[in-house]
Length: 366
Image 1: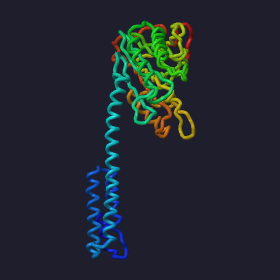
Image 2: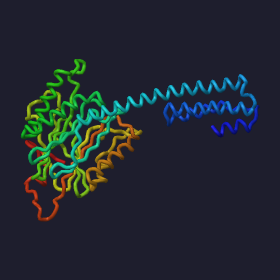
Image 3: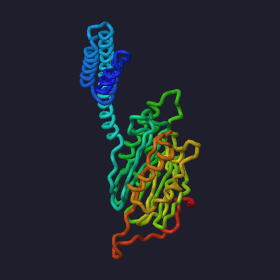
Image 4: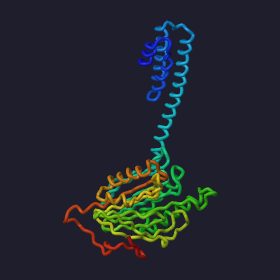
């Protein structure tokens, strides 16, 4: 305002710069509210009047029109600023309620469960959302930890209903069933009942959830897994190796497979210092601008010596850099690290299957 006023006075009556004073309230609206914007607008009108007084034309029709025009434009800017601020307050309230609701659905995981360290990352594809169709949960059951990661068909908030149902069913059933196939069958029954009541007719048979159930006992250097159509995890070893197990997947949850015999338990070695990385297909199906998929196993091999939190932080940053910050699907990542034995005299594991991965009823390779 000072520069424009000084320039208008210095250039004489033949060059009129006073109307440019309307820039001041326009810029103020970018970073301030309605009242500061209105105040700057009044000062802009005063600056235009001062220019007219200095030039001796303050009572002319031209100066009066310019002052009124600055006032009218300022009034419009103030109204738009007030509407913007009201909308921002409404959005803040909506985000606060949504965040509280999302935290009720997706409970934060503890950083430790028994001998395990856990870390998780969730990236929702839908803007303004903290959760979508991907899900994970963990439960301490006696001397073991059970973990589930899943992916509802679809993405964003529309898939939240199935995610909430499956999370609740897992938290209840994880403590009631002795084996992973029985747990998977129980979750299938819950999904079938839900879909029978709430699935739209035009989507019959098209709503399902892929899930991976994991059980890690405190006393065995093993991990047991049952896959319901879900991608296999990564097993990161102390020797900087990355193994992708070949699992025996059953159909996804929601397709009426309630017989436990249809779910195979794959058993893999999981000793002290190893890390298991569970993920949803939003990670491995993320593309860069050339359409190249994100190479999760290759990238994770660079950070096998990182603790769970740092490992997922690295993967998250690398994934967003790969996609340019734009995700086509929800992303969930969960890292599970078995703490090393604290000292040579500590109790060690003993099992005949520690060196070779096996599965119940069939063989399994890595």
